[in-house]
Length: 496
Image (cartoon, rainbow, N blue to C red; front, side):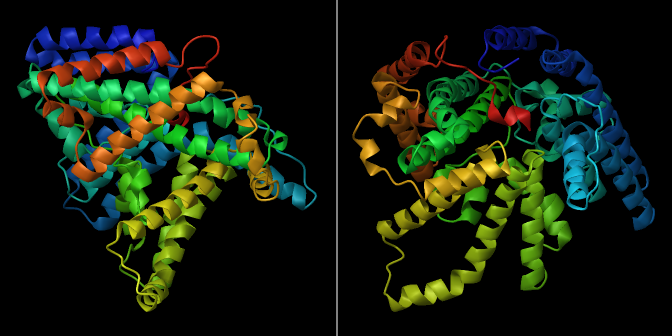
């Protein structure tokens, strides 16, 4: 059940209506039923997987709590067992075929034969998200950050809460589970809270159906047949995907956070104007925040983090980003994408001191807006380059795309109408340009004033507060990417 589907637009109001009027004591049960119904709308059989992960991690948390006075080795053994079971399920469904293909490729290098499994396994939607959320809970119990949850119903809702179930944010038990434990006291008839959530959902829908699904036409046209195009179109394709994935994933997060807020829950923010970042490290403080902090807390810091030599710190950083890339998908393109971001951060840290000395020698004014704009532009360019590997169908496709990008200059195509052969006509390009300008203004507002669109509207006069949402709804209905000319596809991060 996609957020941008008619089914969800019927499902969500129905869930909220019942939730608002049922007895407080069965609120958690109702949301759990709704969450499993939501998940089973893709494949009912895979509800067994999320149920298995829930029971294993819930029981693991209880065992870890009961042996908290035992030896560290015993507690580690329990934690390792829980991680092995859950990561084993994730590996089978997401990485088994990738592992066999990799082994087969290695065997071929030494004259061996290919390995065929005969299995055709469908990847369960959101398995990476709910697996990491459940494992994060167990790690927190192990480290004593939270108490083990004894109420299985509440814990099951924590793992399967439908707004953020299939694409995050990856919630921590100290935030979401704590709210679920207090669900009977949540005020769900708070007007400001409901309006704030609905406005956030509305902004998410605008990003998805007006921008992401429209600009996807450009990205798909170029990436599907890069040999047809020169540098200009390839640059447009890379830029289009850079903006598509931000609007697509940002839209999902906005709708998820807004839907939860309507029901009285506060989910973690997952984006903070990432394309205004001034370094790659800053980018990862702003992009997919729940995942980057998960890897920081449960991978990077346990490996030693910054509390070691520079070489070891760089190694820890690279391992973390390679795993982050692999988390996104079972393909070497994702691993390379993660490795590039690791390399960017290592290079940035290594070169920071000499670059600062050069800047001092050149008398660079680091307080000037031009300096900040230069850093933003460079970070955006590096990020966009890495996205080519993320989007390409294979490593060879990515290398071909990059090679052609730098060897087929055709600046004249900007002026001869060629860009209108990339899937969008003049009118659609104008809609896209207007939408991107609005996106820039909203992100600028968030970056400068640290405000969501709803918070900004709340400060305005009554006519403006009503006019803007009504215009947004009209734009979504009229200019949303619907019908035979557009494929309103599932959200990109659903496949992870």
